[in-house]
Image 1 (tube, rainbow, N blue to C red):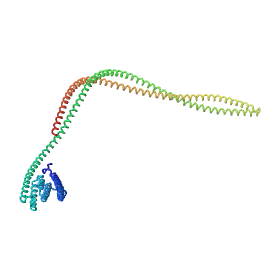
Image 2 (tube, rainbow, N blue to C red):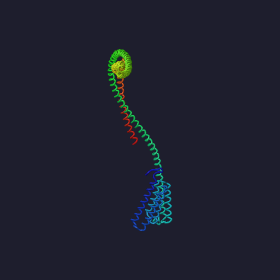
Image 3 (spheres, rainbow, N blue to C red):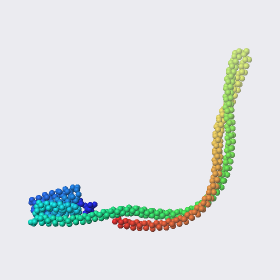
Image 4 (spheres, rainbow, N blue to C red):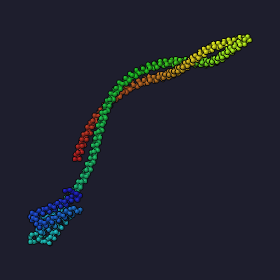
Length: 494
């Protein structure tokens, strides 16, 4: 039975009592059916049983105290038992009466037992008053009443003490249960704390184990790294020796490079002097070409003026030729007129003839002069063309000389810049040579440091390996502690 704050589950007691009522009702109906069949008594009992069941069921579902429900169950059954006993007195009715009273005792309430016992005593006495022979088959009804009351009240007293002691036992059980519950709560709280602590401890152990494992792995990596560093230091020592050897060679090469740079600088200086001399000569040539160009230009202008003068002479000769032609024509006309004049005009004819001859000679002379003039014009035109061609060639030569002059100037500037760069390079080479000397000294120091570093790495590697062994042992110990803790936690939580 479930223990509650009031002792135990009274709702369940009421449910048991209701089940007992249903069971008793079924037995009564079966007994009546077996011994009497379907007669009037069976139907009467059926009606009584139905009334009892309806009342009991209704009371069971009403929201009242369970003790009140138990009292109602007992009183209703008692009334039915006594009413049945009135109709047909039997030991079964008395047993049903005791059953009704016993139902109230299941609640372990002293007051309920006394109240139900008093109510049943009252019902017995009332039954005796109404039907004296209902409680006994003897001729002395008072004796039957006395025996019934004595037997019943003795039962009441016994059940009272049983209820009292049972109640005390229930109260003791409730008190112990309360104490046990408090202890259980404390134990649960303790176990909860243990569980929390175990969770934290599990996490810490797991974290500690992981940290140790991580440290061990880190140490392993460090060992590998230090081994590689040791190998690297050895390789570094070899490389430093190679560097030292290469530095000595580089030093020699730098010294030779300085000598070559000095030679190149001297050659470059000589080239600068030669380039400057060539540039000066080209500048003088440029000046001469400009003078020639000026002279040719002057000659070309003079030829142009001469051509103009010859053209004017040609015009004059044409005028003379025309005058000679007209003079010849006039002389001819004068001869004709002199011939007509006869003897008087003979002298005039002679003069006219002489004039005609002079005119013809003048025309012939003009023709010769024109021929000479035309020849001069042709030669002047040819000279003009050649002078123009020469002038163009001179201009082209001037341009070429200007380009060559510009080229030599640039070449001179380039040689000057190259000379400056060679001087700068020579200075830098001297600095590089000095740096190589310093680096050579430092490489020797680095070699000594590398040897010391190698020895230190070996000592550190040995220390790390020893620490790694300690970490492995610590990891084994932590795993053992973790296993023991899990065994202890299993024992505490089981």
